[in-house]
Length: 357
Ligand SMILES: *Cc1c(COP(=O)(O)O)cnc(C)c1O
Image (cartoon, rainbow, N blue to C red; front, side):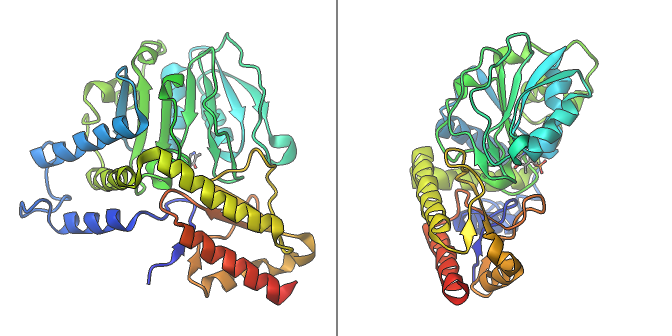
């Protein structure tokens, strides 16, 4: 029986995407070969690649002057690749949590980093707002959703310098004004597919801002733009599954529908956390993530942490143990998470409260 999956990443994927992938792994399009066995230069794979890119463009309404790339190496490689290509002298970063800090660390290898805002003073329980963006930097880097601390910025900010965003964990959960960004990247495994494929959306004009330093071929965005993500063998199966996820998003009504569902799931779960005597949400209202809902036990019930995880497990609910840096619990409610999944967790929280409070 399928569980109620709240894993932070890799995470729950839509049933139909799993079913269609499993079929294609055995045989693709009645061609007597698996998706794993065909050449990435074959007509059959080319069709998969092209349709996936077209779905990106359609769902996100990506302007003509942007390229869509599918690379390897995860979002973690982008932490280095962005400054490798674009940090000439100084870049601005917002320190909103663990992933932002990791990105900052990599950027410092290539130049000066101006951390223009940070939420470190309150253990990242809010999203830094109202920061002033300097105009003497090569770009500004933000993390739109902080997967570990559970904060999110739900607007596309105006930036006087090229805006680079790590959207790993809230990508395709709402319509985004791509034209406000110079580069968007993320690992697929949080909202659009299995681990192993990294998406990059990059503006043509930004490509011209490349730093004057030797960059190995594989680390140059230009390589992947010119070869349309086919410079080397792309992760074919992962891209196939991603296409199936995107087809599912489209069939559900696109990003407006994802947005509405994300709000519904988050509203239900935060309302229960705020009501329930046992739990509190450490993140400030106004910064609360709709994708990673963090909650902890009230101090007087602190010792019940392990028991609640077991209690959930017995009810087929999995993946709610919090990140080691925050403790408590984290329910990751990405696109494929259903209202029924959320209701199952809420029922468990209410029953646990009845037993304990
Ligand atoms: C998971 C995550 C990463 C790291 O992604 P990998 O694909 O594992 O390298 C980076 N940034 C954010 C916001 C994430 O959630």
